[in-house]
Length: 614
Image (cartoon, rainbow, N blue to C red; front, side, top):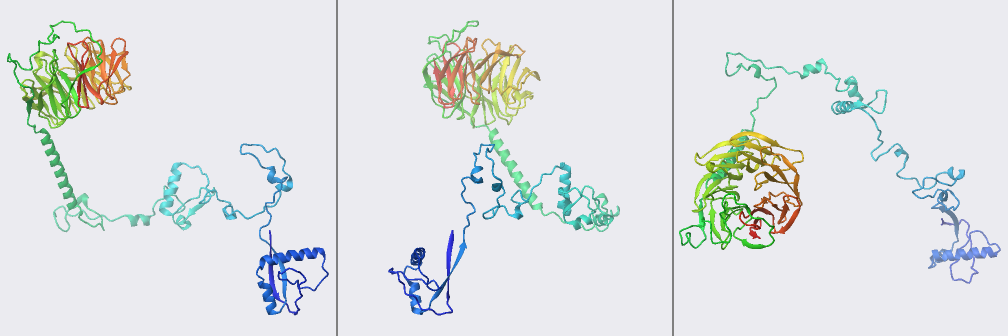
């Protein structure tokens, strides 16, 4: 594109203005040269100039100025090339020849030599200047060098300390950094650099005299090997006040901790509340008496075969009374006419099962959630273990607390010894990885089993009560001889998970373990403790909860709660799921089968409800 720039100057020779012969009203513009015969081309050129003059001076200011001055202005034309045609379109040129798709790998066009040898045209690329030709990054030129880590570390340290290092880009021993520093240090890296004698003398400090051994204190006192160096200032540390504050703070924390533990150890006032109308019936019997006015024989003789069991289908009763989740339920031994429940609301409740289903008594004595409860063989006493670090023995009939025990640790599970002549012994699995054996007559711990590496979760007596099995958070199963704190069987496999719930089969030949990988594993209870790999029960999700396992009285069915509130029943022989019962809105943490009924199950959940199913 070309632009016309007109420069106006005063003519040295005055000339009279030439009258315009055009009929147009546009102002005339002199050509500055004399008059010449007009041709058609000249007339067209003059018309174009007049139109251009009209566009440039639409209001006739130039002609007005000429008329007022009375002088003739000469015109000089100059052409300025503002934007040269450097990228002129050429349909047959190299620009069209090299057009290709991004996926093309071959150009099927022979480009002409004049196109390839054409000089570079157009403005210079600001990002490709001559000074940037050697740069391959924004900060400069980066070169790849290969060197071992030791050499790099030494050169890096030499540069940091002395200010020079070998130049890795050259092979003739060049240096980068301060050449004066390299000269002063003999062009040696820091790993080979040794201080001169002058430097050693300057660095070496003179040791203070050890002193006279006969002088105890004052000037010249004996310092021995503890003598310092000349120039050292013996400044007492100004942290004594801070150290005293730290010791005081530590003392306060220890006192607060001890007070909290003492508060935990201090037994809450134990009491019980009877909720019935009368403690004795017309015959002078308490609720401990096994009822005989029901259509179920609750006191079967020894050797009587259990009834054939069926899977329950519907809920027939709900016990309500706990304000928080229920953590454990236990039936009265043999008869099952009473139900004991432990809850997170710090209460233990005793319920009637076969009559009106009311709450008979509430036991109060714990300051925190009750974790576990357990009857003795006769049902006259029961244990309660709480997060307040106390284990208490209660009288079932009177509701009095007979004895309280605490070793300062949280009990996870408690259980009386099953033998009739050892009812004064109970076992407790503790949070501190130990199992304690406590004698209620001697009021002391008579044995401690401490081989586990995690909190103990279950205790199960097997092999005619001569041995017991424990499980822990350490993902192991350990077998013990009673009263001997030595492990006789250690079961630990890489694929094993923690087993927080264990139940003995009614035949006492097997025990089932609830594994946290959502399966139930079966082990023999004859002393070998071998896993029965043919029996594995899966299909439920406990979601990390210690959901208890249950067996029907005849051992035909095995059941388990789930984290979603279901109870799943399997056929123990085939391993198939028989029924999935929707029982609660929250996790079913525990459930028990009635010992003398053929299809009744009691479930307990963290929703605070206890339900009876048939």
